[in-house]
Length: 331
Image 1 (cartoon, rainbow, N blue to C red):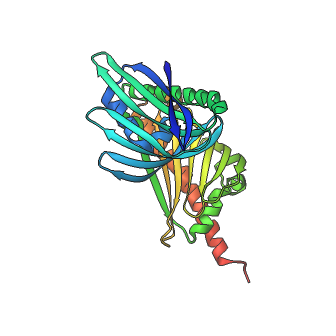
Image 2: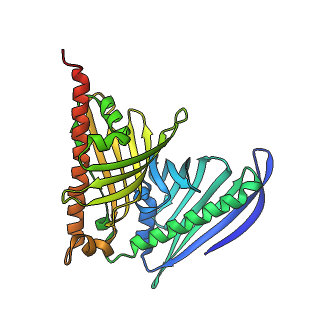
Image 3: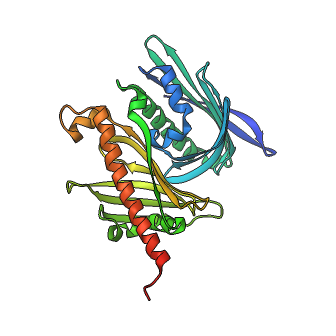
């Protein structure tokens, strides 16, 4: 549910209405577990549907700054926020330092009020719009994303399995002759069906990058598994030239409720590329996908092997392409 309020404040010398909206959800999950999920912002892309990527800029005892890219009303938006974390009060407060129109200002808090029967999650936003005409769309986007975030938190924390068993990160690293060539290979995923045996089809659209901003790719990919079956995923990818390509799967495989990842390119001349995955397992689908009697441990092992094998295959082909580029044409 949500509760709207409004009062007048001054932003940049202009009198604008600041609005307050409170979204709440009652859940059987523990307040501590819910707080920890919100506190670990780097895991948000695998937990929250709107979150695409989070980059931690500063982190100190009880405070942090990060930049987040998220899907808002069908577009990828980015902003920088400062947060204060209070693990004793189970409260996280936040304030956007750099916003994007139509937002003039945005702040708020997460609070978790536990009792013997569960927890009430309270998510509060205080915000002003640069133009009051934009307010209905802003409110609609805020309501949609907040309700999705509350539901995702509760869904993950209510599982009978510990969150740390369902939500985990792993990575593989490979040496390559040229980081730049490897980056170009992974960025051009539209060419993967001709370059990678486990990729059947890729549909790619891309928004041109602004100065200082990553390119945004929308990628739909059909993957062929070792047993010959196929599955289709859709991802948003952010391309930071020469540094990293990060992605969030909008349509993850049936075994997962969330999957985000990154291709990380060493910038110190060591010629290494790391493929990182963060996944959130859906325990209700394990036996359906892996067979009767399989467990969370089986799902973890399967995902580590299957996703890791695909990444290692991509890295191996990227390394071979980089080596061929370095060798140049035969004389």
